[in-house]
Image (cartoon, rainbow, N blue to C red):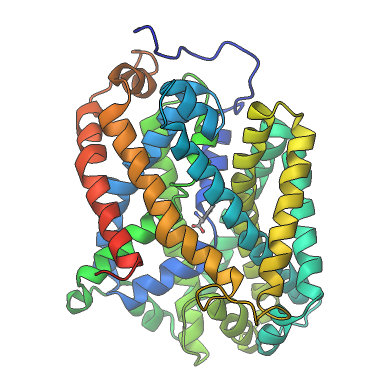
Length: 449
Ligand code: PHE
C-alpha cells in the first residue's frame, strides 16, 4: 500500500449494515421521478427499442464508470463529498469538485422537496377518492397549499435522516424499495389486461431506427446520468458508507440494472393506460399530475390503481430526496463538526427556504424570473445543463488521470482481495469516453449543438 493510500475503515464512522441494504439505498436514490415519467416518455418518442439499446450502452459505458468512480472516492476516504476529495487528493484544489457537488445537491433539494410535496398531495387525494387532473395549475400556483405539502415532505425526510445511516436511511430503503417493487408489479399486471396493452407496448418497444439521430444519443446520455444520481456527490456520500468488503463494480452494475428495469416497467404501466383511455402521453409533470389522474378516473378500479401509482411515485421521490439530503448532512456533520441532529435541522431549514421560494415562483412570485425562467425551472436548468455536467466531467478526469492508481486499485479489488480485471478498461472509459460523452451533452444543454 503506498503511503497516501487510505486504508480500510477502522474508526466508528457509520456504514451500511448489509450489502443488500447498501444496494437498496443506492437504488432508492437512483429510482426517482426520472424513471417514472421521464424515461418512458423519451423512450416512446425517441424510437422505442432503438432508444432503449442506446440508453443501455450509455448506462454501461458512461453511467456505471462514473458511479464506480464516485464509489471509489467515497469508500476510499470514508468522508463526505468535500472531505473525500480533500482526503484522496490532499493539498490540491480538487476538493472544489466536492464543493460543486455539494452545491448541486443543495440546489436540487430546493425543487425536489416541492415535487415530493406534490406527490404526497396527489396520494392523499387518491386516498380520499378525489383525484382530478384538472386543478393541477391552480394547485401549484396556490400560495399556501403546496407549501404545506412541501413542509410535510421535509418532515418525513427529517424523520428518516435523524435515524442515521443504518437505522434511518438503510432501514427505510429496506422497507420502501420492496414495497415499491410490489406496487409496480401490481400495476404492470393490471396494465396487461388493458384494451390497448399492445399499442402501448409497441410505442415503447418497437424499434424505429428512423427516429435515431445525434439528439437521441444526447437524450440517452443525459438521462443515464440523471437517472443514476451521479454528478452531485450522492454516490460519493453513499460510497463512503459501503462496507470494506462490498464489491464496488458489482454494486454499481446491480444498481444500474435495477434502475433500468424499473424505468422500463414504469413505461409498461403508463403507455397502455394512456392509449386505452384515449389521452395523449405528454412529457413532464403534466403527464403525471394532469394526464394520469384522468386515466385513473376512467379505468375500472381506477381509484385503487391511482392510489398505488401515486404511492409508488411518492416512495420513489422520497428515497431520492433522502439521498440528496445526505450530501449536505454528512458535510455539515464532518466539516462543521456539528451533531447529526443539528446537521439535519440546518439542511431542512435550507431546503424549506429554497423550497418555499421555488413553490411561490410558480404562482405568487411568477413575476420574478431569472433569464425568463421561474426560480423552479431556473434551478432545474442550472443544475442539469451546467453544474452536473461540469461536476461529472471533473470527477471522471480526476479519477481517470490524476488520482493515485493504488487508491483506485485498492478500492475496486477491496485491498487486493478480489480480481481487478476491469481496472484498465475502467480507467480508459473515465479518461476518454466519459469526458467526451459529457462534453457533448454539455454543448447540447447550452444550445451550441
Ligand atoms: N435519479 C433520480 C431519478 O431518476 C433523480 C435524482 C436526481 C435523484 C437528483 C437524486 C438527485 O429520478
